[in-house]
Amino acid sequence: NIIADQVQSLDDLQRNRELIVLQLPASSESETLFDTVLHLMNTNPGNCDVALETQLDADIVVRVKVNSTLRVDHSARFDAALKELGCGVRVERPTQSASRVR
Image (tube, rainbow, N blue to C red; front, side, top):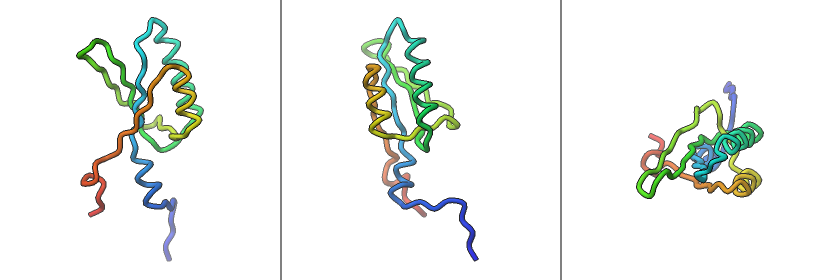
């Protein structure tokens, strides 16, 4: 007998390993923007890790990986809501060699 807690296709497993990078615009209203982005993340729970990224200067980009307990569902609705806020959305996937099952 085999008892499974969760069954996923390989495609779903690969998708769940995506890192969603939210590119936040530099703004004087950053506290309001962060609150809104946090609300969107909380209302779209899922299995994808998230990083927040903003450009401070022409040569300086700051990236902060969000705690892994706050993961999101990468969907068209989530992307559209972020783009309405002026945020960019980029998906980074693990390299083929890193994701290979051994």
